[in-house]
Image (cartoon, rainbow, N blue to C red):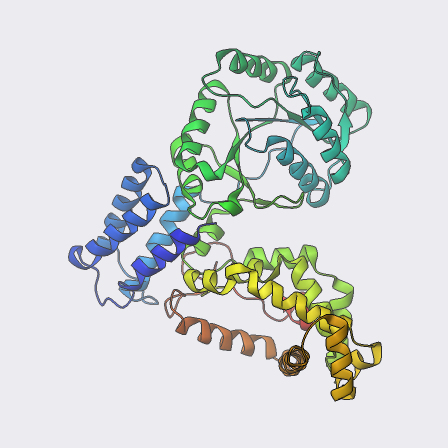
Length: 490
């Protein structure tokens, strides 16, 4: 998401970062480019106009902080305005009600409501430790109830059965009564997809809302329809007292116009982003982190949170102890690291959140899934080795290489490439295990990424590291959670 917008804005802002003093003349062209970038991202025109005007006012009236050059201050203004446009901070679900707390899901046909109900149930179950019951009040789509039953089973949520001949209000009331008997904390009611112009359907959901009085009424909308997502949300908000928006299919939207328009047009916060088809692919929407990603500053906080949830801590702990004792990093360890990386969303998921990555360069590097294919090939090579060969790569001579290549369906040069890659990773892991090794390596990485353009201007930190910026964050440092290779987060 935001790939095109990120690339355009990074290019636009690069011209002003070296400026000695901000004037109407030297920011005019940059503002024009920023305006074009936002319009091409399908951000609503009124939002673009307000955004540009606020930046102009602040840039020309800005008293530049001593820690920043005028050009860097301009980038910070753009960052802060992006955050403000998208809603300042993440707004979590309001579940402070006598259980069961009721969540009503509304939205257009084909927006992905039923799938999102399952994702939200899993999110609440795993991260909020809630017991969740789901029910379908969609009596118009024949397979809707069965689909939700399957989704509920997959995510481990309770399911309240219903039939197409029932009244949606009766279904919702029955689900709430059943949730009380089963001591569920949250009830999520799925509804039929409807158009804002469909008066009968809108009247039905109004009756449903009045009957169950939900603590949250969430509008589910496809991010790929751009600013129309915001306009549709506004139409629904006039009929229902919405409390928030969930943007689905955000991973397929390279523009990001919906995310930048929804809050400004509807006044309702985006609470979640759907970022894939899997049931765990639902993330809280953090405006300050999204703004950092748009400007090529990465999203280290989200990356670290993802690592905390998905990392196999036992394997990480075992590897950390092994490296501290001075034992080598063998090929089995390398295989484990590849598998851990896949759990974190692969190379694409990691690169997107690292600070200083040039959007166009990343897109080119990831084209056709080449890095993922390479990783799978390397895994195949290692899996073709014996346990002894994985522990002691020095055992692998010419005849063993031929056997490994034949067993993995690769060439001898592919086996050599894996061994060379292992040697490089072994050196890196030794550096990580040394005191202060992680910070030294990250400084080196930032230096390399800064040369590629599109990164942070000198003197500005990562997410949360900007003067006057968001919550404390920045790069992982010593102390706290052990990450792959034994480095930690405060």
